[in-house]
Length: 541
Figure: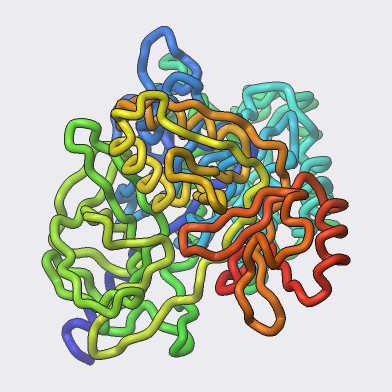
């Protein structure tokens, strides 16, 4: 075994790379904060809700996120715990940003699903869960806000099974009744954890008093009724519940379930330790050359996210790369599949939200940020020149909302074009040009309306451009081609005036229409026309 091979095996064994998914407001960003708190990466967690103290969550770095208390970009965080190197990708919960979340899920080996104990499985959780399920990645469940009144744990298990179609195995079980919880029973280690009073309002790690189940102090603290109810629940779980099966967990068919409260640090450490023990190390990835194993000695990775202006002082642009195989070294030369050119990977960085440090090496499972002069695109593969291949394509989302956008001040046209171009490369918006129209304005397509707010905000704050935005009545976009391959033009297309004829960034013809009915008319009158939800060379998400 070569020295590099031994080094790779050792480093891969330590790595856990996961995304946290949930519906907005289930407490995802708070949980991220608390995991960092236990990892020693931050000493005082910034409670997301306490605006009075003006402490913001470390993982929300964009000004608009701080103002609204929501995450609109995925942030990347790294910390060490118990000999493991954890890479967390915190994703936006809001459905208008599901595209960013989807791309992030391409870069992880497992996911943590956060569920609000009172609300159960919500709409956005369903969508994101579906993506994880399609990729067959292991899913761990953290039932949050146990300090609030909520649904009975058994009902939540039923809901997860009925709504998401996955069975769950509770790793711990809440002690208490009717939402008044005092601790958890740890089923893995057969221990009772009762929580000490939280005097710091969740800002410091919370101490648990650990007891053997037969310790008389336990009944004294929780009361006879609560203790008996717990015994009944545990008996029911062992008789009628699922068997724990690691193979099913790895296949995404069984979810280990933990109960806790991120806000008060209740059960967070228990969850973190259980997760580290069970979660997969970096997994092989599909490519044009078959599966690429993480311990393959030749370096490879792919770009899953591009973010402009993370540091407003420098107006920089970073490409986030998931390392899939081999060892990453600062200033290494790699082959860039899309352009067919060699690139030098200089100034690599790793993150604690907006705080970053230059690094010299990184290993499979790690996420590295690279300064991007405009070379990288989302989904790009970088690899060793002696073994050239391409990682599987990212699926794309069809746009559903459209607006005409132009700069209010024509003198700022240059900044306007630069800003729009950069945000398009980030994948935040999709850009179209109306056929026959000048270049004064663009048609912008997005998956949701909140993206327009972010577009306007960022153009103003990062590029100093005020824009005029007129929403368009279209809700359906179709990429077009004729069966015999001749060019689709407004003149060639019968009924082109029933919608808006535009071209995408790569000059492909696209028709925007109000609804499916209008589309039906176009199809009937152009029998040799092929319509696609996304560009013909892409796969729909």
